[in-house]
Image (cartoon, rainbow over all chains, first blue to last red; front, side, top):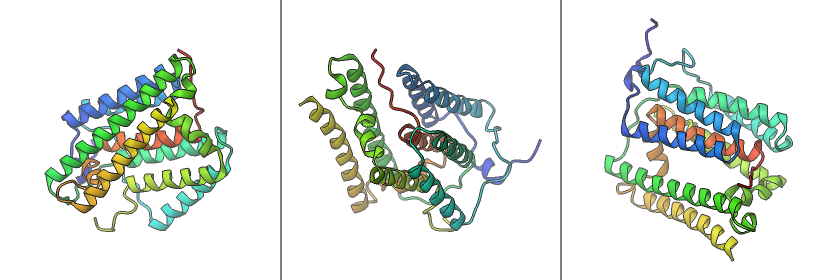
Length: 202
Length: 72
């Protein structure tokens, strides 16, 4: 059996409360997407949920790549810039968007799956308070959105009276300035999540 | 009227998020800023995959997948 890298041994996947809650969240997301008729989205979320369950059952033995992906910052910035141009200029809902989104999805899944080193952080209580507050906002947003969606498809004039986030943002993303803004913010958010803006050495 | 109520709900949540972050930057020892909190919680694979999957789906939903409004 190949030796696991030091980082992989650092944090082994366990059935913690946090892990169980996240698996439940992803399972609920998969079920909700399937229920609303977005079957592809549902299958994707079920697949991720299943991968995480299997990862725990096998003690973290699922490895997507043998060595962590790493590239100079300028390469990551150049690739992101090229992706931004493609996503802005390609027709929405077309095959170019499909290929680009699948490529981004596979890359970030590989990056997310790789172990990440522990970082120094402020007090545990401040982190817990922050996590709790953001979890409350996240749940509130999802609950409001789910309620609006349910009312929009069950009530008379529902689509007009109970707009979902998609209905509100769709006209904005349809316009060129709106799409530039959306793609820019979305990619910047992704770069932030993979640690692109973190200072070297952290 | 109902359109405004629904939209105001989203805006209220967004304002709440913004105020939370402002407070966190003002008093980081009481509430950690979002970036610090994410850095900490994303050391775990499940959390990392969950958050990054949510981010990716947001782009997928708006850039490729058509908006679905099925009458139930």
